[in-house]
Image 1: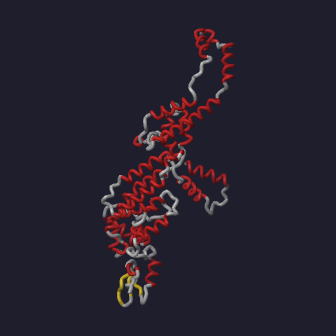
Image 2: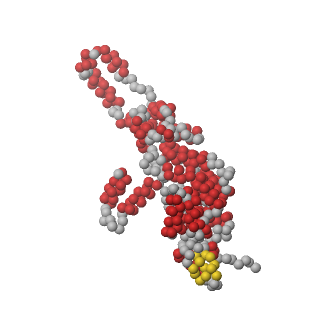
Image 3: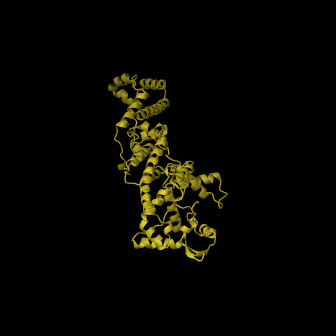
Length: 422
């Protein structure tokens, strides 16, 4: 005979006898008879943040399978982290439940605030995880671990032990924060729009892989170690062909910080040859814009027939004019492009510690590398992510509201231009 299953509602109620139960959260008593349906209704209505799934009832492989199935549809850059989560998901769900409790209960927040002030800290609210906000899980866990002692004290004082974390779960949260920190740094840096980001993609991805590999997880819990391995495998699989992107390799070559940072020498040589071809095209276009050779020769003959007064006086320059009249440089557009690119590669590498913007660097050297400067202005505007566009859509959504429905297209364009360039 199967054992009797006790309802999960009893994790949040205390049996007071005579068919009465007291809620551990709000201390209100309810009657019950043959079932606990009214207790469950109370939890769903008054405490929706409480999980009605027992932590130990669902095996970890089942949770991992459900998690992978749900996160496989994610097409956000943070989707790699979501797809790598598995056995640690129950702990993060419990943290979300506890954070929701402190956000919904004024009494709980006052207790948490009081314990923070007693510890000499500036009061901070717990942060909630939002599925549409990148890195929100990391920020939630980071703030929760930061308030560990105060959260435990507040939950104990409120007799809400059912939603508190065990020592193992606290340690797991700390390990997850250490593993996700490099991912948060990468996401924050490539999501900017005030500086060049296209040239950062390949170097920062390489740095992310190296930083995850260098994390010493030997003392971490098995679940955290598995997260690290899954995260590394997902990143390598997602960006395996990143160095074959012509856009990102060109941006990387034209950035004075990363021009020599190619991991594959073949990719470096191919990119260099592509840059030389682009410079050759620019030089040929410039040459076509110059006056034709026939016109130049006609001008020279006219000048010889009617020399300026100073040449008539300074006869010593007649020999020079006659000798140099038909002499032209033998260099081709390709050779000039090769020389300019090689001089650029031989120039000093700009280190990140120098805090020099690539655009500012090119502005200072536009007379030294004129054709590379023109190419850099054209190619370095590539963005690493679509975040700037999404910010623009959000700003436009705030502008076009129900109170401003008569705005014309031209006026909206002008307002958005001022908003983005102010």
